[in-house]
Length: 274
Image (tube, rainbow, N blue to C red):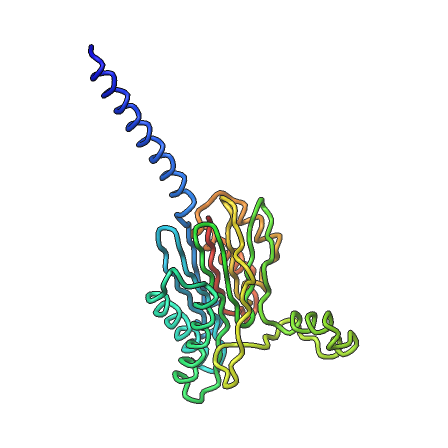
Protein backbone atom coordinates (compact mmCIF):
# COMPACT_ATOMS: atom_id res chain seq x y z
CA UNK A 1 0.00 0.00 0.00
CA UNK A 2 1.39 3.32 -1.05
CA UNK A 3 1.68 6.66 0.68
CA UNK A 4 -1.41 7.97 -1.14
CA UNK A 5 -3.54 5.24 0.44
CA UNK A 6 -2.46 6.09 3.98
CA UNK A 7 -2.98 9.80 3.42
CA UNK A 8 -6.47 9.12 2.10
CA UNK A 9 -7.21 6.85 5.09
CA UNK A 10 -6.08 9.54 7.53
CA UNK A 11 -8.35 12.12 5.88
CA UNK A 12 -11.28 9.67 5.98
CA UNK A 13 -10.73 9.00 9.68
CA UNK A 14 -10.48 12.73 10.41
CA UNK A 15 -13.69 13.41 8.49
CA UNK A 16 -15.42 10.54 10.29
CA UNK A 17 -14.22 11.89 13.66
CA UNK A 18 -15.58 15.36 12.82
CA UNK A 19 -18.96 13.87 11.90
CA UNK A 20 -19.09 11.92 15.16
CA UNK A 21 -18.24 15.06 17.17
CA UNK A 22 -20.90 17.09 15.35
CA UNK A 23 -23.45 14.33 15.97
CA UNK A 24 -22.85 14.38 19.73
CA UNK A 25 -22.91 18.18 19.80
CA UNK A 26 -26.23 18.09 17.97
CA UNK A 27 -27.61 15.53 20.46
CA UNK A 28 -26.53 17.75 23.35
CA UNK A 29 -28.12 20.83 21.79
CA UNK A 30 -31.36 18.97 21.13
CA UNK A 31 -31.56 17.91 24.76
CA UNK A 32 -31.23 21.53 25.83
CA UNK A 33 -33.51 23.04 23.23
CA UNK A 34 -36.52 20.74 23.05
CA UNK A 35 -39.08 21.90 25.60
CA UNK A 36 -41.65 19.65 27.26
CA UNK A 37 -44.82 21.76 27.59
CA UNK A 38 -48.02 21.14 29.51
CA UNK A 39 -50.77 23.77 29.62
CA UNK A 40 -54.26 23.24 31.03
CA UNK A 41 -57.36 25.23 31.94
CA UNK A 42 -60.40 24.18 33.97
CA UNK A 43 -63.62 26.11 34.46
CA UNK A 44 -63.86 25.14 38.14
CA UNK A 45 -67.38 25.89 39.41
CA UNK A 46 -67.82 29.08 37.43
CA UNK A 47 -70.12 29.52 34.43
CA UNK A 48 -67.47 31.05 32.18
CA UNK A 49 -63.85 30.08 31.56
CA UNK A 50 -62.08 33.44 31.75
CA UNK A 51 -58.52 32.13 31.41
CA UNK A 52 -56.52 31.60 28.22
CA UNK A 53 -53.05 30.52 27.22
CA UNK A 54 -50.85 30.38 24.15
CA UNK A 55 -47.33 29.40 23.19
CA UNK A 56 -45.04 29.55 20.20
CA UNK A 57 -42.34 26.86 20.33
CA UNK A 58 -39.29 26.87 18.07
CA UNK A 59 -36.18 24.69 18.00
CA UNK A 60 -34.26 26.77 20.51
CA UNK A 61 -36.80 29.40 21.53
CA UNK A 62 -40.21 29.59 23.13
CA UNK A 63 -42.79 32.23 23.96
CA UNK A 64 -45.59 31.25 26.35
CA UNK A 65 -48.37 33.29 27.94
CA UNK A 66 -51.03 32.61 30.57
CA UNK A 67 -53.80 35.16 31.03
CA UNK A 68 -56.55 35.31 33.66
CA UNK A 69 -59.57 37.53 32.99
CA UNK A 70 -61.95 39.21 35.42
CA UNK A 71 -65.26 40.91 34.75
CA UNK A 72 -69.01 40.47 34.59
CA UNK A 73 -70.46 37.89 32.21
CA UNK A 74 -68.05 37.47 29.29
CA UNK A 75 -65.89 40.58 29.85
CA UNK A 76 -63.12 38.64 31.59
CA UNK A 77 -63.08 35.96 28.89
CA UNK A 78 -62.84 38.60 26.15
CA UNK A 79 -60.00 40.36 27.99
CA UNK A 80 -57.97 37.15 28.45
CA UNK A 81 -58.49 35.89 24.89
CA UNK A 82 -57.67 39.30 23.42
CA UNK A 83 -54.48 39.44 25.48
CA UNK A 84 -53.27 36.00 24.34
CA UNK A 85 -54.11 36.67 20.70
CA UNK A 86 -52.23 39.98 20.82
CA UNK A 87 -49.08 38.37 22.21
CA UNK A 88 -49.05 35.43 19.78
CA UNK A 89 -49.70 37.72 16.80
CA UNK A 90 -46.90 40.10 17.77
CA UNK A 91 -44.50 37.21 18.39
CA UNK A 92 -45.05 36.00 14.84
CA UNK A 93 -43.36 39.25 13.76
CA UNK A 94 -40.75 39.26 16.53
CA UNK A 95 -37.16 39.72 15.39
CA UNK A 96 -34.80 37.49 17.39
CA UNK A 97 -32.19 40.26 17.28
CA UNK A 98 -34.49 42.42 19.43
CA UNK A 99 -34.41 42.16 23.22
CA UNK A 100 -37.11 40.33 25.15
CA UNK A 101 -37.75 43.56 27.08
CA UNK A 102 -38.66 45.32 23.84
CA UNK A 103 -41.15 42.57 23.01
CA UNK A 104 -42.69 42.59 26.50
CA UNK A 105 -43.12 46.37 26.61
CA UNK A 106 -44.68 46.49 23.16
CA UNK A 107 -46.91 43.45 23.68
CA UNK A 108 -48.36 44.54 27.03
CA UNK A 109 -49.06 48.07 25.84
CA UNK A 110 -50.68 46.80 22.62
CA UNK A 111 -52.72 44.24 24.55
CA UNK A 112 -53.93 46.96 26.91
CA UNK A 113 -55.16 49.04 23.97
CA UNK A 114 -56.76 46.01 22.27
CA UNK A 115 -58.59 44.96 25.44
CA UNK A 116 -59.99 48.47 25.91
CA UNK A 117 -61.19 48.47 22.30
CA UNK A 118 -62.68 44.97 22.57
CA UNK A 119 -64.59 45.67 25.79
CA UNK A 120 -66.00 49.01 24.55
CA UNK A 121 -66.62 50.39 28.02
CA UNK A 122 -67.50 47.08 29.69
CA UNK A 123 -65.87 46.50 33.07
CA UNK A 124 -63.24 43.82 32.46
CA UNK A 125 -59.54 43.21 32.87
CA UNK A 126 -56.84 40.59 32.43
CA UNK A 127 -53.73 39.53 34.29
CA UNK A 128 -50.92 37.90 32.34
CA UNK A 129 -47.52 36.26 32.62
CA UNK A 130 -45.45 36.02 29.46
CA UNK A 131 -42.11 34.24 29.32
CA UNK A 132 -39.47 33.83 26.66
CA UNK A 133 -36.88 31.08 26.57
CA UNK A 134 -33.71 31.34 24.51
CA UNK A 135 -32.06 27.97 24.87
CA UNK A 136 -31.91 27.65 28.65
CA UNK A 137 -32.11 31.40 29.35
CA UNK A 138 -35.40 32.64 30.79
CA UNK A 139 -36.89 36.12 30.80
CA UNK A 140 -40.43 36.99 31.87
CA UNK A 141 -42.89 39.81 32.43
CA UNK A 142 -45.98 39.95 34.65
CA UNK A 143 -48.98 42.22 34.85
CA UNK A 144 -51.31 41.54 37.75
CA UNK A 145 -51.63 38.50 39.98
CA UNK A 146 -50.10 35.32 38.53
CA UNK A 147 -47.21 33.43 40.14
CA UNK A 148 -44.13 32.09 38.38
CA UNK A 149 -41.79 29.49 39.90
CA UNK A 150 -38.79 27.38 39.00
CA UNK A 151 -39.02 23.73 40.10
CA UNK A 152 -35.51 22.41 40.77
CA UNK A 153 -34.37 19.36 42.75
CA UNK A 154 -37.87 18.70 44.15
CA UNK A 155 -38.25 22.29 45.36
CA UNK A 156 -40.34 25.21 44.07
CA UNK A 157 -38.45 28.49 43.92
CA UNK A 158 -40.67 31.57 43.66
CA UNK A 159 -39.50 34.03 41.01
CA UNK A 160 -42.37 36.49 41.36
CA UNK A 161 -45.85 36.85 42.81
CA UNK A 162 -46.62 39.52 40.26
CA UNK A 163 -47.97 43.00 40.79
CA UNK A 164 -50.04 42.61 43.93
CA UNK A 165 -50.58 45.00 46.83
CA UNK A 166 -48.38 43.02 49.22
CA UNK A 167 -45.36 43.37 46.92
CA UNK A 168 -46.03 47.07 46.29
CA UNK A 169 -46.33 47.75 50.01
CA UNK A 170 -43.06 45.91 50.74
CA UNK A 171 -41.30 48.00 48.11
CA UNK A 172 -42.65 51.27 49.51
CA UNK A 173 -41.76 50.32 53.11
CA UNK A 174 -38.21 49.35 52.06
CA UNK A 175 -37.79 52.70 50.31
CA UNK A 176 -39.14 54.57 53.36
CA UNK A 177 -42.12 55.92 51.41
CA UNK A 178 -44.66 54.12 53.61
CA UNK A 179 -44.61 53.38 57.36
CA UNK A 180 -45.15 49.86 58.64
CA UNK A 181 -48.26 51.03 60.50
CA UNK A 182 -49.79 52.43 57.31
CA UNK A 183 -48.84 49.26 55.44
CA UNK A 184 -50.77 47.13 57.94
CA UNK A 185 -53.86 49.29 57.53
CA UNK A 186 -54.02 48.99 53.74
CA UNK A 187 -52.54 45.52 53.24
CA UNK A 188 -54.53 43.27 50.89
CA UNK A 189 -52.27 40.39 49.84
CA UNK A 190 -54.50 39.02 47.08
CA UNK A 191 -55.41 42.25 45.31
CA UNK A 192 -53.58 43.19 42.12
CA UNK A 193 -52.75 46.85 41.60
CA UNK A 194 -52.07 46.54 37.87
CA UNK A 195 -53.87 44.83 34.99
CA UNK A 196 -54.43 44.84 31.25
CA UNK A 197 -57.39 47.04 30.33
CA UNK A 198 -56.52 50.26 32.20
CA UNK A 199 -57.25 53.71 30.84
CA UNK A 200 -54.12 54.91 32.65
CA UNK A 201 -51.69 52.27 31.38
CA UNK A 202 -48.98 51.06 33.77
CA UNK A 203 -45.96 49.03 32.69
CA UNK A 204 -45.56 45.34 33.58
CA UNK A 205 -43.02 43.89 35.98
CA UNK A 206 -40.11 42.66 33.81
CA UNK A 207 -37.27 40.42 34.93
CA UNK A 208 -34.09 42.47 35.27
CA UNK A 209 -31.89 39.92 33.56
CA UNK A 210 -32.08 36.50 31.92
CA UNK A 211 -32.16 33.58 34.35
CA UNK A 212 -29.94 30.64 33.46
CA UNK A 213 -31.86 27.40 33.91
CA UNK A 214 -30.40 23.96 34.49
CA UNK A 215 -31.16 20.72 32.70
CA UNK A 216 -34.47 19.23 33.99
CA UNK A 217 -35.59 22.53 35.56
CA UNK A 218 -39.30 23.20 35.16
CA UNK A 219 -40.92 26.62 34.82
CA UNK A 220 -44.27 26.66 36.65
CA UNK A 221 -46.88 29.36 36.03
CA UNK A 222 -50.11 29.22 38.06
CA UNK A 223 -53.09 31.54 38.31
CA UNK A 224 -54.73 32.65 41.57
CA UNK A 225 -57.29 29.82 41.38
CA UNK A 226 -54.55 27.18 41.50
CA UNK A 227 -52.55 29.07 44.10
CA UNK A 228 -55.48 29.28 46.53
CA UNK A 229 -56.47 25.62 46.30
CA UNK A 230 -53.24 23.63 46.50
CA UNK A 231 -50.27 23.97 48.84
CA UNK A 232 -46.67 24.37 47.74
CA UNK A 233 -45.89 21.00 49.31
CA UNK A 234 -48.66 19.29 47.34
CA UNK A 235 -47.34 20.86 44.15
CA UNK A 236 -43.78 19.74 44.90
CA UNK A 237 -44.91 16.14 45.45
CA UNK A 238 -46.77 16.05 42.12
CA UNK A 239 -44.00 17.81 40.20
CA UNK A 240 -41.42 15.37 41.59
CA UNK A 241 -43.05 12.47 39.77
CA UNK A 242 -41.27 11.50 36.58
CA UNK A 243 -44.15 12.30 34.22
CA UNK A 244 -44.40 14.51 31.17
CA UNK A 245 -45.65 18.05 31.67
CA UNK A 246 -49.09 17.33 30.16
CA UNK A 247 -49.75 14.46 32.57
CA UNK A 248 -48.39 16.47 35.49
CA UNK A 249 -50.61 19.46 34.70
CA UNK A 250 -53.63 17.16 34.55
CA UNK A 251 -52.79 15.62 37.94
CA UNK A 252 -52.50 19.07 39.55
CA UNK A 253 -55.96 20.06 38.29
CA UNK A 254 -57.47 16.71 39.32
CA UNK A 255 -55.97 17.02 42.82
CA UNK A 256 -57.59 20.42 43.26
CA UNK A 257 -60.98 19.26 41.95
CA UNK A 258 -61.06 16.25 44.29
CA UNK A 259 -61.13 18.70 47.22
CA UNK A 260 -64.60 19.76 46.04
CA UNK A 261 -64.04 23.38 47.04
CA UNK A 262 -67.18 25.50 47.14
CA UNK A 263 -67.29 28.16 44.42
CA UNK A 264 -64.01 26.94 42.86
CA UNK A 265 -62.42 29.60 40.63
CA UNK A 266 -61.15 29.05 37.10
CA UNK A 267 -57.89 27.12 37.11
CA UNK A 268 -54.99 27.71 34.75
CA UNK A 269 -51.36 26.66 34.62
CA UNK A 270 -48.41 26.19 32.28
CA UNK A 271 -45.51 23.80 32.91
CA UNK A 272 -42.32 23.88 30.82
CA UNK A 273 -39.43 21.48 31.38
CA UNK A 274 -36.02 22.39 29.97
